[in-house]
Image (cartoon, rainbow, N blue to C red; front, side, top):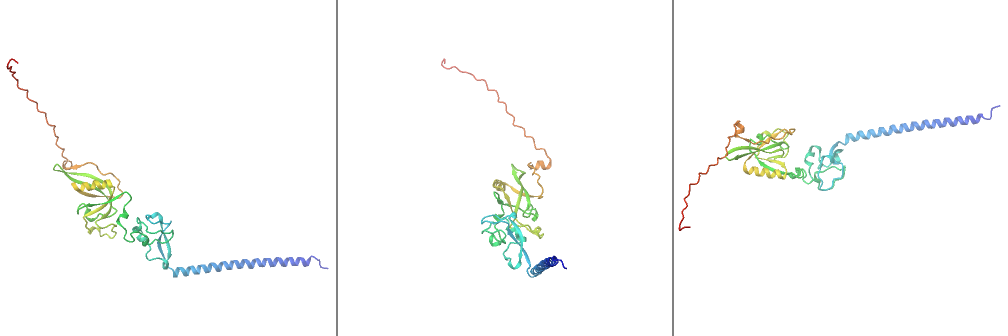
Length: 277
């Protein structure tokens, strides 16, 4: 005679098998679905890479407000599909032209920066290159003190003043470590190596208002010579004046103070008494 617990045991075993089978089918379905989704993502991504070439554009990292100056710290590169890139976008190659300009419109963060957003566009105003509080001053030069055409924007120079004093020529150290921002009409560094054939009669330097007055006065009384300085050289300019005697090692003549002439003794005087007075 069969035990009454046998049918219940069979039903429990059947339920367990069905549960295990369901879990297996579910796990397989989840695994297969995940594989399918990843396969589809990789497929469409590969298609996008093939059909959508990407380009790099300059975008602000924060919202730029109208009137603000564009600086390097507020910008970054961002890749976008080429078909969505505006031909007027600022690229990495032209970033130096955009830096220092003011924005004419508000520009949202992450939105490509356009030349139309900038005051000067692709041809910024020269005044936008000046640092706050400084001035641009043009100085006359000749072929010699233009360093034979090798002087370029972004170079640093010292200025010497040649002046005739009482018939003797003297050289005075005028100002040191001035930044050149233009040579003639050239405001950008020539990277093609053609600067040696250039000629110009003026250089423009960035100076304080006080130094602008000093240079203007110096130009009216003598000749200014620009001396090219290594960009890493911070040594001070020799402050001593050079004249012909110092050049040739001749001791300057000793000028004796004028001797005082002794006054001759006064001649004796004869007193006359007239009228008994």
